[in-house]
Length: 226
Image (cartoon, rainbow, N blue to C red; front, side):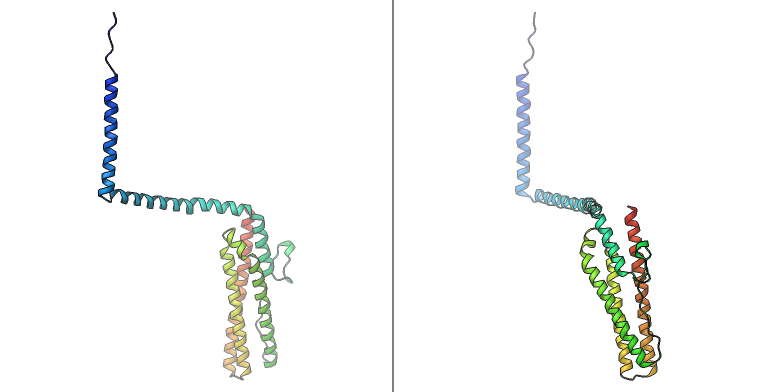
C-alpha cells in the first residue's frame, strides 16, 4: 500500500510568484523613489564622494609610498653617485682627501689689511672666489637637481645648497658695498661698518657651507646603510 505524497508543485509555484511579486514591488519602490525624490541621487553622490576619498587616501598613503620605495631602490646606485658628485663639488680640493673620504669645505676669507689699495685687491679677490663658488653650485644643481627630486626625499639637501647660493650673493653684495665705501672716500666708521657686515656674511656663508657638507655625508652614510 503506497500513500500518495502531497503535491509540492503548487507550493513552489506560490513561492516563486511571491518572490517575483516582492522583487517587482521592490523595483517599483526604487523607481518611485528615484522619480519622486532626490534621496537616491543624494545617496549615489555621497557614495561616489566616499569612494573617491577612499581611493585618494589609498593612493597617497599606500600606493604612492610603495611606488616611491620601489623607485628609490631601483635608482639607488645613481642616487649615491649623484650625492657623491654634489659632495665632491662642494669640497675643498686642496684640503680634502676624496679617496679616503676626508672632506673639508671651501671657505671664504675676510679681508684683514688696513691699506686701502690692498683692501681693494682683497675685495676683488673675494668677489672672484664667490663667482667661482656660484659657478660650482650652478653646475652641480643643473646636473642633478631634477633627478634627486624625482627619486627620493632629497629636497632638504637641494634646498640647503640653493640657500648657500643665496648666501654667496649676499657676500658679493656686501663686498661691493665695502668697495663703494672705499671708492667714495667715506669715513672710517662707515668703512669699518661695511667691513663688519661683510665679515658677518662671510661667517654665515662658511657655516652654511659646512652644514651642507655634513648633511651630504650623513645622507650618504644612511644611503649606504640601506
